Length: 424
Image 1 (cartoon, rainbow, N blue to C red):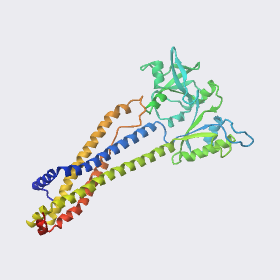
Image 2 (tube, rainbow, N blue to C red):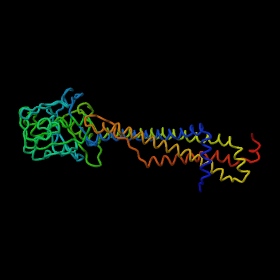
Image 3 (cartoon, rainbow, N blue to C red):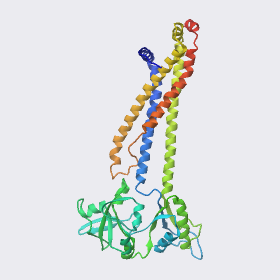
Image 4 (cartoon, rainbow, N blue to C red):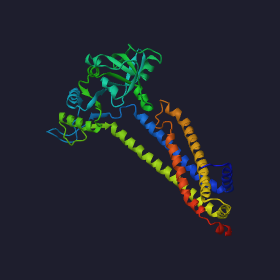
């Protein structure tokens, strides 16, 4: 279909002649596109922020620890404390094949508790833990200098330590060399063999930077922990869900510690895979809600276009009658009506698209500094939009508007010139 200059001029004159009606119709299309763009970008920003927050841990990791029993079993009274130990570690490794990485851990203080760490006259505080090399698979980290724990450190019970960035900064200065130098924990000296940087951000990053990793065998010996384990961090083999692994581990540990099979309080657990799935499903629901609201807004705009065009055609009966009486064909009348709709929808939709992208750019400028600030616990990342999705939505809107205009256009085509010329 060839669109000439006269048709453009005529359509623009018609739109200018009915400014209020044009603006009202265009506003529905504008807000539909604008709201859809902003909501999609904002929703993607929140989703990216939450996933980035969780990316510092293996998303299928599982944590299990001992609590107190709540039921009597095999002659043992309730209220008994379950203390996990090294023999449980050996049993889990040998009897459960679904374990890919098992990382028993022991703490020097309560959960998130800290201890004084010294080097010469300098003192700082840190969260001190005893670990196996496998903990790298639970908490992904970047080794900035030196290395992480290895099997020889565990077998030989070496007094070595891997420290976080804040510990390095407080004890050795930002530019000081820490590798090979000693730190003291409760009067015991440990040689620094590695400096790590956590792959996290926000308030949790500060906590990770304040950690000190020791070989678990050394930790248990020098701090008189015997064979006690504070908790297990586990990653299942590929193809096995964390929930299946959790059931097998809990069943084995209950049997070993003579816990009633239905005593759900004796062992605590936290499954990051379930949390990740809950968050993923939440964002599926949020995305469905966004699209529902966006499509409903766009459909309201499309219906507005259809109604406005129907009214406009009734008002222009005499004009269409004159056109047909001087030789205008039905197809040319339909073409003019559809072109008027396409111009209106295209212009309003383009402005809505551009304004939506500008709004996302403003939000991006406002949040970029927060998302890059390691001290801020931010759940929102830079907003983003898939332009292919937007283009598809825009094309669908234009097509829907044209289809909705076919009914008014068919009325214009059927107008009888004589009846139209008689109309006042």
